[in-house]
Length: 244
Image (cartoon, rainbow, N blue to C red):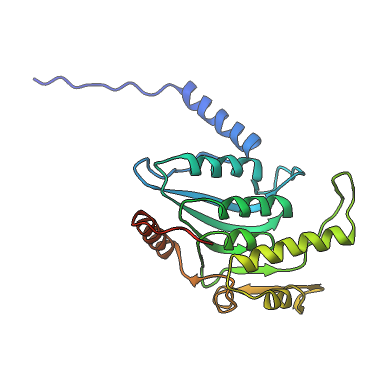
C-alpha cells in the first residue's frame, strides 16, 4: 500500500518576518512587493506615479515617485545587455520641476528604444517625461495639464526670483517642443490660457486633443505601446539609429 506523504505546515515566524519586511518597505521606500516582469523578457517597465519627489521629502501619506530611486534604475537599464527596450508608464500629478526634468533628460539620452504611455494623467512636469521617449501614447480618457512653472519656499537657499522662474519655464518649453511635434507658440498658448482651469491659468488636455496638438504621438493602450516598442527594438537590431 502506497504511503501518504504529509507536508508540514509553514511556521508562523517566516510569515511574520515577511509582513514586517513589507511594512518596512512601505515606510522606508514607499513601495510594496508587486509582481515583476519575468526574467526572460527583453523589455523593462518603469512607472512614474503619484507626485514626483525632488529635493524636499513629501509627507508619508503622499504616493510619490522618488527621483533618487528612478535615476539608478535608468542607469541600470542602459547598462544591462538583456534589456532591449523600456516602457514608461505615467500616472502622475507632476511635482518637483528639476527632478522631473532630470528624469526626462535621462530617458531622452538612452540608447535603447523607449515608449511612454499616459494612463489617467500626465500633468505638469509629467509632460516632459511623457514626450522624452522615442514614441508616446495616451489613453483616450487620460489628461495632461499644461501650466506655467510654480515654485514655493526656497531654491538653493534663497527665495526664487522671477528671472529664475522664467528661465526654468523656458527649459521646460524647449524640452517639450524639441521632443514632440507641438510648436512653441501652441504650447505657450495652452500654458497661459485663461478660463480652462478654475481660478488659474493653463489647459487640461484630453487624450485625442494631445495627439491633435502634436504633443503625443498616438492614442492607445498598453497593447499598442508594447507592440510599438517591439517594432522599435527590431528596427534597431536591423541597424536603425534611435533619434529624438
